[in-house]
Image (tube, rainbow, N blue to C red; front, side):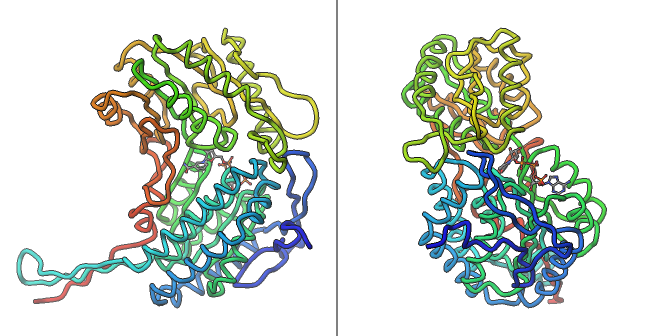
Length: 482
Ligand code: NAP
């Protein structure tokens, strides 16, 4: 029997057809556990981008007229297919991205859930009808799809970051061009094949993997046909794209980086706090925008918390994600690993103590060990940037005002984690933290039924929840004389 990598189409998906790049170019997809090339996929250039945009534009009007129930059922069928192929999709994801198979299976379920959720939302798009206050006019208020969308996804959750955008776009009646991250195009191409199998009409979804995103994307954003950008990635790239959107006033949803504080008060249940830390830090090897980046622990429990965390982190098994029993796979590439190692070296030079980990291993693959640092100097670079790796930096604090100030002292505001047994403190601190999401005594906030997103430079808009579809809908009102 052929492998999932052999079965996935490795070409561009435009207007319902699988095609080579106009230039004939291809790009390699690597296994981060070995550094070996898994396969090559078509590498789209600007001409392919133009064809994909044209296909999305051509399909928009008819797609917007489709019955909501029909859109809903396509999503629901795709959900069923994804779930039925969990093992195959998980293996594909682990091969190109590195996360352990068990985590990949959890992502497949999480990703599929966005399709089920938005299949339920597709049939609940509502308008309004009423008399205006002056009594002379009536108002008919309707919701319309925003139009053709450009979706850009990162490599860290290759399937879920796609479904979180495709789901609401399909539900709302938008067509789209999707550019996946070049490290992980296979999961997205497999998803496109599943949506086609589920009955998605030609041209509604177009997928263009590329090694040259700037040259492909900028003409689309400046061309006037794309009406919406939905981007997940770094704040730096998000800023560039937002500036490009300004030219033709393209609506933008941006899910950007984070610098999550993880706060443990002196009265916290330390078992719960350490469990929460393991999830908030180690989910996806720390390569998550929601990853706890700065641990603030009350002085009275800091030593015990750090020792327990180091013990748990040190017991994790590091290795290729496809091997049984592995907890921590490789980081995405050599550049990602070098960044993590540099940040640890900088903290250690400034006086941090390494409780566990901290040494880059020899050998192939982009592995980095789970690491716990204490005594981290406030000037250390890892406190001011996303670590994006399995490194926990533990700082201490003495009072609530001090820790809230420190937690908010960042340009980002995606998520925070708070551990305490005092309900009024939990609510008070939860209100004061400048973030879009707070985990109270939990290290996991992501859920398709909840609005995911940040404030400050962590982004614009929300994905998931009841509001997720709003990002893909416009208001239109008809004034009618009474
Ligand atoms: P990235 O470097 O910003 O890339 C994200 C995507 O944008 C990739 O597909 C990338 O392609 C593309 N891109 C880069 N430059 C572009 C340009 N000029 N025009 C158009 N597209 C361009 O981020 P990443 O390293 O893949 O992902 C990690 C980041 O994503 C982290 O900052 C993380 O916090 C963030 N993230 C946020 C969320 C959230 O929901 N808030 C979720 C997951 C991840 P290339 O790789 O070819 O450059």
